[in-house]
Image (cartoon, rainbow, N blue to C red; front, side, top):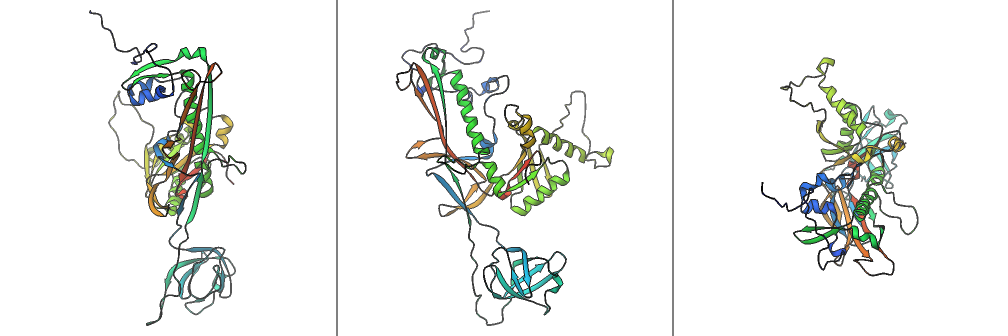
Length: 445
């Protein structure tokens, strides 16, 4: 056979030794994942380390839209429910006191229940935003309720005489304003000047680019820290660097929470019912750990257990080459579709898969898909449920700034190269009432 000079090495990368006239600087630095993602996608599966490497929180990329912001904080407003229901209302005679604002006007018709009996009544007077007087529409009093608190459907009906004036007062909706704050994350990596010879050069369609294994690892770790912060960070109570409100803390404060694993169809049905009560989204993704995935597989496989008295939904053709797939990608239950995605970070022994963290950590996160209407900058917009924001102003984007000092970078007196990495970011979570966080143990009280 004739000699065949191959254009690359076994990793399919063309290496350049000491390209003439080039200095390893910030303008030609590249990381291996960028090489794979931009130029050589077939290389991505080969970028492997013994215990895993690279992005560890993919859902922020898959589920969260990226955008920018210009100030130290971002705000948006969400309107509550269209109708008003007052719960825990106490009464004395015909006078009712609500723990929340009732938004009622004279001549409004309300429906009152104590869980056993219902009464229709008409508002005759409004004393304050929380106190009103009503009369029973059948002429009786309200003794049928005893002394227990009642629930009042405030937006039920009204009734006016022919030729009467207009309603006394119009109803207004005061939206709730939610805010999140900027977060600055930094990391530094130093390497001696003599070790800079360990740089590797790669030829790309855009010219030679260099990388260094240690800098590469620091860059990946920095990205992971950024993603941990976006999701898990709790805004500090004091200090000048309070930081961002993480996604999880916002869900815990404004959304739905649960303890222990989802194990039965009834458990999943309860979640579907709650989510249907909370909003209009009917499609969710459940990001789960290994144990929750096992419960889901067992739960759904049991639905088809004909031998155990369950339903039989048919058979499949089998032969010796058929692989039995024991996982489930999605399920439709009670009008809601749930998609299942393993979240490896929750099982990693060097992170939240550590023994004690598994006892207090997340079993799963349930995220809605699509968009939700909010008010932002005075305009009504359809925003994604989760946005990952990076600071950008006057043409400067602070998503990930890398500065090199020493050989190849800005000169300084030390015989080292210093790599500074910095990012400024925040996130925006809208419709938190349609999210669900479930802990693996009895965490929430």
